[in-house]
Amino acid sequence: PLAGDIFTTINCQAAVNTPINAGAQGQIGWPTTGRSVSQSYNPYIDPSTDARDYAKNGHKGDDFPGQMKDPVFATTGGKIVETGYDKPTSLGGFGNYMIIKGIDGKYYLYGHLGDNVGKEQTAYTKKAGDTVLPGEQIGYLGNSGTATGPHLHLGISTGSRLSDFYNNSTTTINPCLL
Image (cartoon, rainbow, N blue to C red; front, side, top):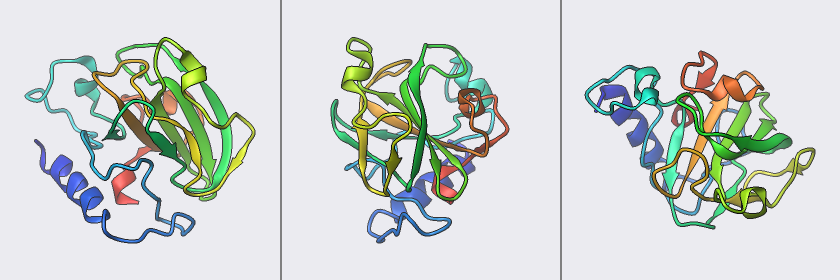
């Protein structure tokens, strides 16, 4: 692994036993009941880790493993600006996703919600236009889109479009370094 990848994971893991005020500027709460990160934000090219297309552009978010239908929580308060289905591609493939405009002005993507069979019926507990509080349940962990198993992909961006979260984007922010 790259040094940046290890450092990111340590920062996320260090926060496990630290109370987080998800409403405070610069801090976000955990999005799942689990307290582990299976793949970290990695904006660097590391051809030795994976031959798939996303490795060529890095991984623009953190993956939180879990079980199908585990609850997913808003990491910060804000307004849900979009929900939808992102088909599998080399740059995205987030499946059922939700984008929340946080109180800090950043945009938060929650990807791979629910499953590919039920689509949105298995993915969301909230809808576009709803206002959410930090820690409020917004959906269910899943494996929709391009996923090798159940997990949540959390991405943060200064841009509001779905493509702003893709692996070739320059607007993403490392979730574990907020």
